[in-house]
Length: 222
Length: 76
Image (cartoon, rainbow over all chains, first blue to last red; front, top):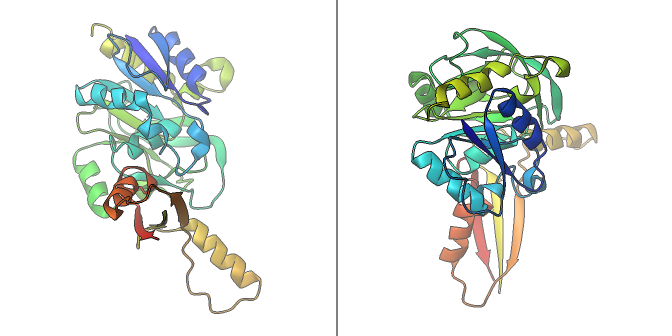
């Protein structure tokens, strides 16, 4: 599996994401935001956490208009995979690749701690390793993770089984306790929690590792 | 010419920052503050003749996230 990880000024989880993908057997290329093309044969694009462009204007808004993000859009429209974590999820909503928006946490605080999540669907290459209902311990670290979706959108996401993860103890005010959502074709996942920070026993847990292993297994022959 | 764009969270979108400001005003002794909504103002120097339509296009593409925000444009 070939993964390309986008790097924006202010990204700070890009190398962690690389380590998690490589540990699962992927070959990884880091792609600077000013480049206008993804490497040939890219199977999945990782959009990492951090504070792209200092969160100016709105989190993810400037990155959503970077040259490389146009290539990301083309990749996704062709049916390519993408995984956006934290600021990456914000970028995916700002590009409208994923629906909804991420607002300031309801308690206005930056929250950095490990939280329990529930896997809501195993029907994606990101979540295949788990049964729906499985509980995971995954770190969150964000100020703007309050997922906003109106009632119609929540209903649609539920009907289409596109809610990948929910918070067990909603830390940020997200509508429907939503922590991660899938695209209609189930090949793009955006989530606020950091599975790449829970992918190594030495670094506080391995509950996120199966996501990277599952992706590598699914995309190995692509 | 100058343009001034006001961006506000849409009605119905909970504004936690506005709520915090409302509470702070109450604790300072200002009574009767029913609600507070916080937004942003973006001022731009533009080439003469730039149309409102162009500024609105800027809002749609970047300055506002119309999923959650509304905007208004003042030219002058």
